[in-house]
Length: 94
Figure 1: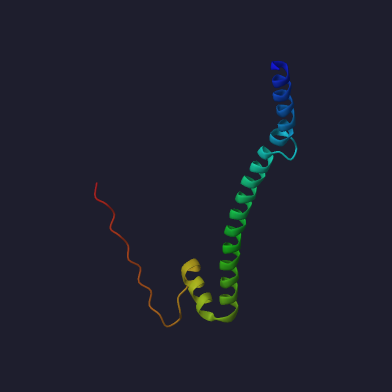
Figure 2 (figure 1 turned 90 degrees about the vertical axis):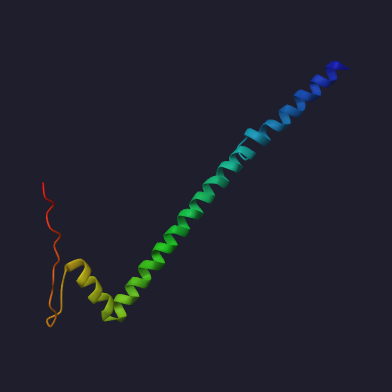
């Protein structure tokens, strides 16, 4: 009777081994699920970035306000009828 129990336990373990450690086992499924979650998160971030870039491109194509804002901030340009004042902080005394 004891031998039959040992044989059955070994048989159940042999049947369960591919389920847990095989090519399509639970461990592999959990790993693929984790990878899928990471890829979806990355895709969501890239979609948000693409939407922001698309909005910026549409804004640059349709209006002059965005172009003027970029010229002022990135290139330091001013209009012809404007006066530019630059405020410089005094150098610290030693």
